[in-house]
Length: 285
Image (cartoon, rainbow, N blue to C red):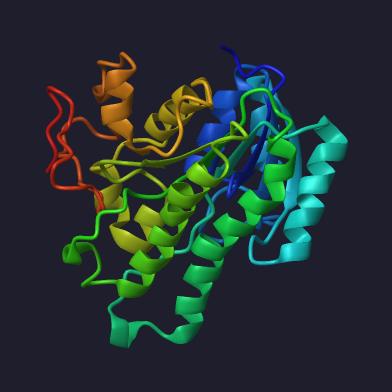
């Protein structure tokens, strides 16, 4: 199954994992609505919706750059309508936009708490809600959340309660919507990386340049997302996937190609359940 002619609505697609997913689909000739906030170049963060559109077009797809704040209901619905007007439908919704602050309770101001919950949990709910009426008319509709398995271990909460609540809010959308829209044939799945992914969040907010070398590239998430989109939506829904485990089950054996620096040990991501075993030959940490 190819994604040629399929239309993706991708939040946070101006850079990082969102852009990588868009580019992988574009190689098939897909249409991509780039729903992101960055219209002008940021002093630290690379890419805008317009530079992303250029890359998508060069990769073989068609792009629609849209300035979208997923916290703004009217803005989201307007972007979805513009996508419908341009491409005539929506086949895939990717909820990638996310805000992060790994701060403990007393160090988390309420402005940051509100931002994370509005972007992550509320934004995912809103974007999904806006796309669902159109996804119901698609041939093989998928909604993918870039969110973790719902592992209620205290270790994932103790250091950053607010962020975990916001991120798990995205995953709870998967849990509920997969069942709510099962009869409509819309698949809702979650995808999460086993290791750090080399993105601006790692570079500027979490681990710096040294941490980047211990990461995998966004392409592992893009390849995993692509494999999800090719699954029959009525048969593959409600799953919480770890990138390399899922790709191994799909036949991938070369995971070294995704490493930023093969000489550095891989940095484990958080939220990966203790019983999730890496594929054969993959060592973490």
